[in-house]
Amino acid sequence: MRRIYFDNNATTPLDLRVADAMRPWLGEHFGNPSSVHAFGRAAHEAVEEARAQVAALLGVEAPEIVFTASGTEANNAVLSSAARRHGFRGRIVLSSFEHPSVLEGGRQLKDLGIEVVEVAPRRDGRIAVEDMTAALDEATRLVALMLANNELGTIQPVAEVAAACAERGIPVLTDAVQAVGRIPVAPRELGVDFLVLGGHKFHGPLGAAALWVRGGVAFTPLLVGGGQERHRRASTVNVPAVVGLGEAARLARLELQDRRARMASLRDRFETGLTEIPDAVVHCAGVARLPGTTHISFPDLNGQDLMIRLDMRGFAVSTGSACGSGSVSISPVLAAMGMDAAEAMGSVRVSFGDQNSVAEVDAFLETLAREVAAMRGTPQEAAG
Image 1 (cartoon, one colour):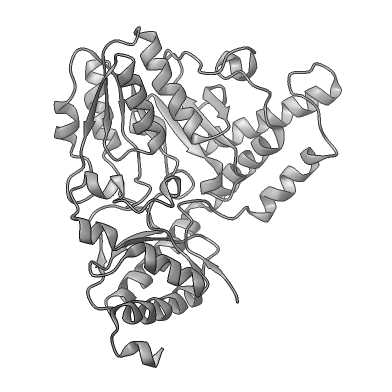
Image 2 (cartoon, helix red, strand yellow):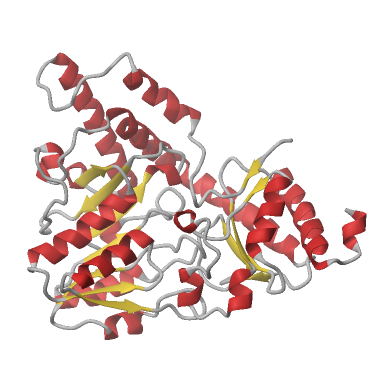
């Protein structure tokens, strides 16, 4: 049975061109980029080339890029820096449907004395600027607002929130892991101070991410003990992964518009086809979303059961964030936006990638219609 992958918000397949760029650093070349001999210098040059490629994708300066092992690490580092620089005093404001690395990181800081204020999204899956700014006060040390939500795909008003924070001298972190490589992302235009990206969301390798720190912004490293990454992240650099991230960034910069159009076309075709399935609800369809993300629900069904049935038919989808997979409780994202239990439990996320095709979308629509009908016990079950 051929398997078709529609869970690209969890991770994307590694581009073969990225694999080719990484391959020499998995055997033939092996120097530590901190070493001063020829082997080390070659590794150092490869890392710096990757840094320049990531910077070019974002339109920033290469020295502002800090390589990390994951978006989670980068988010944790910014939260930790803000708290420690202010002696674990003051307030951190974040949206209540951030990635768990931000939400749980914030809640841990709360146990250490930081006041943490969570701002809920509206029913359309977006944070209202006025709700975010109302939570700010003179003691606010950091604001965190993701650029695009990982489950709903909704794009958040980061630039507007950042502008309000700049007037008050408050730094802003945006988790752009879902956005970079899928839509144009320019941190200077957004007006943020910290931005996080992850290579495996745009056909780079797992275990390779980056944190952009605006030049001149105060930042205290989470990992210490070495001078790597200009003393902002101590740890021996994972050269193969960083090289892969750089190549993925280079390709994304060159191909971004084509990829974006392709994913949007597949999503629109899928959502048009959903109109043929009774009671299918597309969430947040009226607001700006990532081009390849559709979040749907069938309020009379269980999304987990539907996901399993689709997997048995060869289609991979998700019931929410991959970091929360296996849970049978309502997604925190859906709960935060006020979705009722029946609609939330009947939800499925479908996320398209550049590797997907129109034929795959059409085949999926047919299978989805049959499985929904089968779960409802309608006559179409026999026809399928």
